[in-house]
Length: 285
Image (cartoon, rainbow, N blue to C red):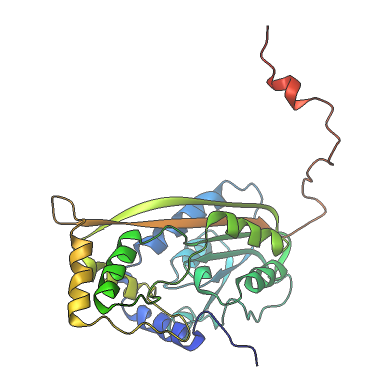
């Protein structure tokens, strides 16, 4: 049997359920990314009728789509989130939906912790009708640099490093995954946001409320001991501004892709250009 990794599916569901209890206390990144996706959707000229909110969380994004007249299906790996929206509990790489069931799929904050992300993206593309749109956002590479530094300082006290923050996906890799999954007209970009915290405890509390703490399978990382935790906290708070708050960075990766359709514009055939780029760039006399 092939080991399912790097994430512990059962623990992921448990963390999603735990997050559901206090979601409103730390859903600011989810709402920010959702609003960005809604803005991007607003720039699309075609209309949509049936949407899937994959990793729905508290339902903010799907509810905004429903307000626009879309028939929205909610889905989440956590039973509490799915049940709250009368939705479907499922993992993103094990979708139960028929091919062509939706013309819009949106997802915020979950694809960075999917075991088989290439497979999940392929299933999402298959769940879309031809010329259907996929919009997603998740926390990507470059996020939480100060927390990483603090955790390393804590591990140094104990004499051994441990995986406490899962590997993150950068923009280039995300774009390659869209191509691999068969999306057309794919775009991957990112935006950074700095959030200021009163201390490391405050940051970790928000991450827990987001369901964003460590869910790596076969975790070798034990909780930091008292001395190690104190060292980590001191390292984090040493980076505080004059008001005592420390800014932590989140890099949000955004994905856009279309299910292939014969009606979509196609790139020009290689070698079909009639003008020379070198000539166009040559300085005018």
